[in-house]
Image 1: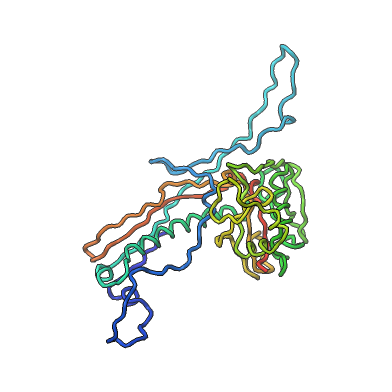
Image 2: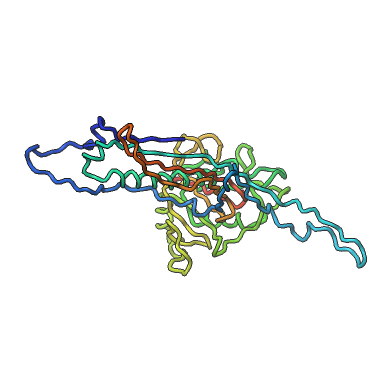
Length: 356
């Protein structure tokens, strides 16, 4: 994908701006040379991905992982002295391949625009491209987390994510006003991550919670170097900050590093508020893949950092500025290549809730 935003000599809005002067043209007017910026959507998800760099002359990266550590009951039985050991098959290793794709962007600025504009267009373009690079990567990691294909199903095909719904809903299609995020939902989601019981929603009508008896889930634990992360939207932050249970038991002021967007720590999970949380609209496509959503809301995610997903770089963001004399332009290019993949899908739990 390549996006080019051009500031041409003939485009009046790029040189003079779209706002017209309200005063008389003969009266002196002072222009500030610094742009007052709009609010940025801050970036959060990528900081919790396991990251690696694809080496030169390589096309992809494989994140090897241990699907599960064998329980003692899965090992071959003990044998008597002077008897050959009963060998156990090590079949728990796997890998997730990430094939980075280019995602470049550029800005072309005419020499006339640079000469006649009161503001520093080069600095503005640099800031915009830097923001673009961070935002597009963050959304890539977010989309990996919220993909409905990660959900668990019956059988021994693998381990997947589970969904906790707001209110008494059992699907996004059943969500209605008032099914907002609650501290109890966070406890339920954490229990799901720490339990060896792999739950899923059976595709019956109505949906019913079921247990996958063929697969044992990994009992994840939050640790200081690999904590549980709960990403929520500002609408869910509002609900939690108005809940006395959350406010009374959330932890602040510890010696742990405060992550970008962190609003507190609850039942061992860092709570991160970000506008990049996946949103769904009433009557729109449901986040759980089950038809249409019954109300507007967000798919919040509780996951184990550095275990749930990986981010492979082939080219980390690189900004270059150069002259283009034949077109009387100065050009700025941001090139980057990356790919995010899910690794341990049972280290992910969704919390689908309404905004109000």
